[in-house]
Length: 295
Image 1 (cartoon, rainbow, N blue to C red):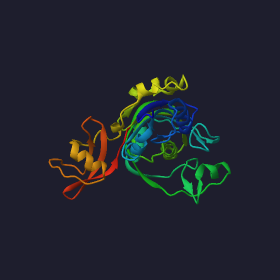
Image 2 (image 1 turned 120 degrees about the vertical axis):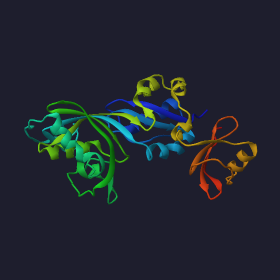
Image 3 (image 1 turned 45 degrees about the vertical axis):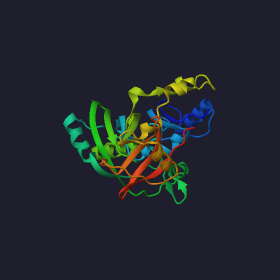
Image 4 (image 1 turned 180 degrees about the vertical axis):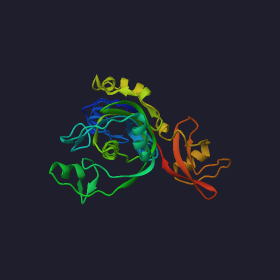
């Protein structure tokens, strides 16, 4: 029987996000598995994985939630990839810096900023991914993109390393942040280590190490025990409970009417408590935009 829901996985270092998906597919014995936001192979931490029809909810985890990271930035050395995986391009002596000087350097990176993505990224340029071009020694100009750094806190400073607690929007590259911070300090820098500690409501404290989910191939018990309900993707949406007739109408794709909801979108649940549909306001009615069948 197919499983439907989300896994909050603590990804180990040395694996791609695609590798994790492949392991979960084999363990769950089902093909419909996807993730909400890639982690670089060297990075660890929260990787949100959807199974079954819950994959239709990935966009609400991926697009509309903040990501949080614990980042170790190494000053005085730049690399080809802006992280520790790349070759060192240049080394420069790190100037004497105290916390006040670092705080002053961090301030321009808080809030809404423009950020140039790294060459070693999965973004496309004229039909090819940037990292493919980079491996061929080709460097192309990348347009700066708006991102939001909601939190940028200096946790520790022990030259040449500083540790940052970062909360940011989708599309933010922590490698680019490390690179740009090093540039602003005049000594260069790269991202030495990265751990994702949250994706929206998915927290590292509640994440399950991948090894616990794949130790016994074909045994779905560890997966089912760790599986979170599909509605966790939209847990902050207002809830409406529908009666039998309203359930029938929504299943048929018809708009329905109800009052006393001060919102533009809601999640509708059936009589058994299961997530039935996502509804959006359409004038005086509510129109289903996604209807689910968990059977």
